[in-house]
Image (cartoon, rainbow, N blue to C red; front, side, top):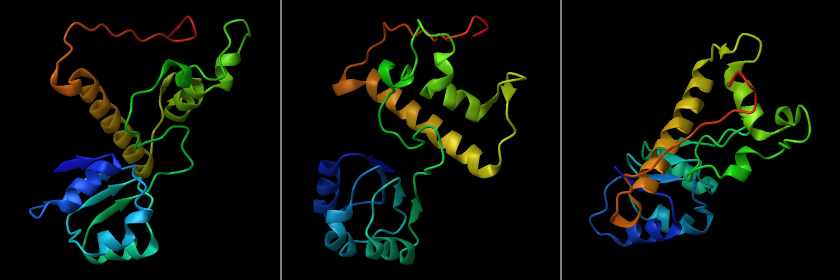
Amino acid sequence: MRELDHIGEVHSWLRDANRRPATFLRIDLLDLEDRLSDVSLAECVFLGCALAPSTVATITSAKGCIISERQDLPFISLRTTLYRTAEIHEGFDPNTKGSWELGFDHAAYVWFMNPKTKLPKSLGIADRLAARLHDSAIERAVARFLHHEGSCHTNLVSRQKGFTPSR
């Protein structure tokens, strides 16, 4: 299934007379309410998109799928880009003891891991789905980074570093 994460890709999809179902990722589709009502949205998937109520009705009546971004998570489960260092380190000051605990990285860690046992928490199905959506989104972003504009970057090294000695 074709994946669309830019409004330009949506316009191209709408112009395609032979359009197939697509997955729409975190796109503001409010301005395309009329255009979306004129095409079949059967089997289309809308992940974290901004949708007009009439578009929601069109999608659901066509048996399409809508998954909204949850607002109660410390991370964006349906993100379309890789994290930047500044995002992960937000709130962290190496000169301030305990500052890691005030930042994004710690909030995401505590959401998933039990800080006392250092083991993954037992998540319910909704949280497991959010975690898997996030993992899938990051996998997609990594693949896009590695294969940017038709070239494949194969000489890369990745390093994961924590803020505490045990990590």
